[in-house]
Image (tube, rainbow, N blue to C red):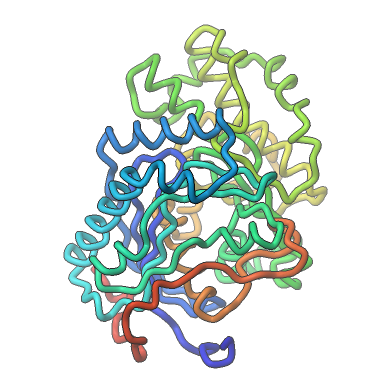
Length: 398
C-alpha cells in the first residue's frame, strides 16, 4: 500500500479540539505525509460555554473515578458525543463555505474528537465523537481514532505530533540548525526532542508530555479574575513565584520517570498552589509550567540549537521569558517566527498524520510513545468512492 501512494499528495482537513476545550480548529493541508507539506487556510470555531463546561465536568469526573471500559463511557456520554459531532459538522461546513472549497476536492477529514480521558497505564484513551455521522453529514470520508493503535501496541498514545515536528524541522530549520526541541503548551505541555534533524527518525526523535500546561492557569483565572486566560502573562508578572512549591512538585515520580510518557489533564493536583494569594498563585502556576518544560528539556542531555514554542502558552510572555532565561544561548522562538500559524498547528499536524494513515506510514515510534516497533494508526469510514488526483491547491486558497 505504501508504494501505491508514495508520490501522491492529498488534500486533507485536520480537526483539533484540545484539552482546554475552547473550540474546533479546522485547517487544510496538501501533503504526502512525508516531505511534501503545503499549508492551506485555517479557522477556529468556538464551542458554546455549555459544551466546554460539560466537557470539563466529564473529564474531571472520569479522572476521579478512573474508568476501565471504553464502550461504557461512550454509551454513558453519547449525548455529549452527539453535541461534539454536531459542532464539528458545523465547523467543517462553515469552513468549506467560507473558503469556497468544494467537498469533492477534499480527500479526507481527520477527526481527533474531544479527549475526555487519557490513562495509558491501563491502556485507555478516549476521544468522544461519532465519525460515521460526521462523514455522512459533510460528504467526505473521515479518518479517526488516531491514538488507539499505539495504545494497542503498548504505547502511550501521546504525543502523536513528533513525526510532524520532525518534518517541519527538516523543511524550515535545516541546515541552519541540527538539534533542538518543539514545545507545545496546551492544557498539558509536551515536547518533541530532535537530536539530529537529518538523522534516522527512529534514533533521533524523542517525545514526552512535560507536565501541566495552561489548564490549571486558565481554570484559576476564570474563577478568580473572570477572564478566559492570563493575556500576555500580565497577572503572573504581578505576583511572586513560590519556588519552594515548584521544587516540591518536581519531586513527584513522574518527573524522574524516563520518557516516553504522557499525561491526562487531571494527572496532577495543584491544591498547594491554590492556597496562595491570587496573583502569587497565577505567577507560581505559570512558573511551574515553564519549569516542567525546562526540566524535560534537560532530561534529554544535549544542548539544543533551537527551541520552538507553540500552543496557547506561546502567548504568555511570563512562561516564554522564563524558558528563554533558562536557555540564553539557544534560539528560543515562537512557531510564527518560522512562518507557521500557531493557532492551526495541531489541526495541520493531524491532517499530516491522516496522510500517513492513508499511506500506512508509521505515526509513532519506540522513542516517542514507547511502542516496541513503529506503528501506523487511525481508522477510516470508507463511505465514499476513492477520488482521483485532487485539483485543489491550498497555496491558492484565500
